[in-house]
Image (cartoon, rainbow, N blue to C red):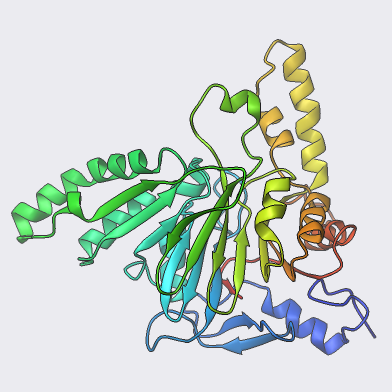
Length: 357
């Protein structure tokens, strides 16, 4: 018997393989004693130790910390955040609500994070930043943490440091703390260009960025803020984080030939509902409304598949998920996979919190 598992060739997956891979995509144990790794060569799902604490594990790992789309609070999923762990060194991509807890649960650890990248500065991508920086300082991190993102990132870090001052002053006076929080956390604004531009490089990782299609021209005319897609290149792998975006030729340029294409996804029924509500609001005089923003600046499964196919990526990983309404026969995972497959014939992975790739 064969199944369309969504993890590879839809016609060559045995029942046993399908069950193994389906179990692998469920949320992992909080201790992360059993983690799941997606093998780069072969496309199989294999069990392995966590990539975080303990002896550094060689290679490049992607840990999906939070896969919920949007600013709502969901007890079953954290908001958007991912860790890229390169030879034991962790880099954080976005920091939505729940990130600090997920860093602990995944065994990546929150004290180990010294570099953060933001795709954009909506609060479902930044909500846990105050907690992260606060608990890094309180729990003994003495090295710097640097954040890179579009315009506003430097201001955001400065604001968070200001928020921390009361706790810092109390603990400095009462506990003899000596680390200067003003010198520990740094924000860096990076350019939002229409061609890939280098924004970061160290001995293990090179990051290039490009502006995506999350902010429409009418909005950008009224504000300096922008939204980015990021390509992270290590010695052996290339990972593209699309950020929140509608279909974007810029993202296609950035993603050409990438190993992993980590992209948001929204159920088409939700997008259609947003379009109807946007039209109703516009008819009442509110042309620039939240429903229009959602409808015009996010990706359907078919949009994701189109970008992936045009870029020639190897595997799609669906993140920042907004499924359709639940029902007796609602299978959002299957709907996501089938939608992507209308355009893209490669591997499709529906992300879950704490999945390790």
